[in-house]
Length: 127
Length: 134
Image (tube, rainbow over all chains, first blue to last red; front, top):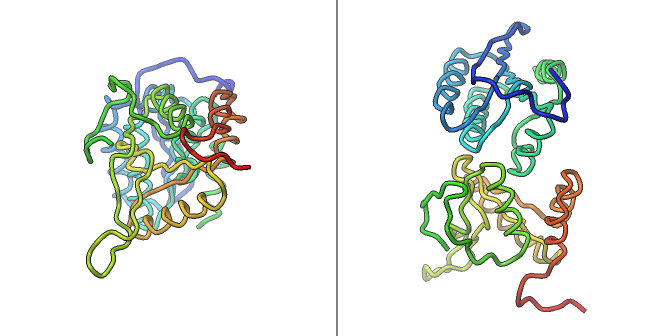
């Protein structure tokens, strides 16, 4: 993770699963999360949520862009998770991305953390 | 007002709609800048009807963000009007409509936090045709 004030270099979109405590799925989003990849993102999140983890953490530290389609997918995932009694937290360290969440007021609806550690700590706290 | 449900892609709009307040224009510009699709006042929700079926109270949020399925109501008016809008938004929420209210303080905070002087200046403007408060 680089300087949180700037976005990482643009790279191809991919989702990687990282090691997480039991009952939590931690996915790291890389590259541009936009309308082109929104279906892939939605499908992956739905699959993970259907798997029934208590907590889902999406780390956007390596995301280079998030458009409104991807934001819609994230919001949809949050609704799905809540319906199942689970929790979703997003790691959004870069100020540029955080600005998008704040301008769309999604920072009021979604739980954002500055670091992966914070997100994992918070998601376990609400167990 | 555009047609209900008519989704526009950000940046695809040819002519800006007649915004009531400069802060709405600034928000629309920010949405465009961040690739956020938006519609201006696309829907009106009936909150209450009279016994004869006529509309007693309705709510038309300023923006709809179709990809996110959230309505945004911004209000830089006097506190009394802000409270009325908040009450309407809260009534709309009980009907399952996702509405977030941006009041003057929220807008000023956004402008300060993200260095948006145009938004701050717009928040300080009175809407065209509104009475001056003496």
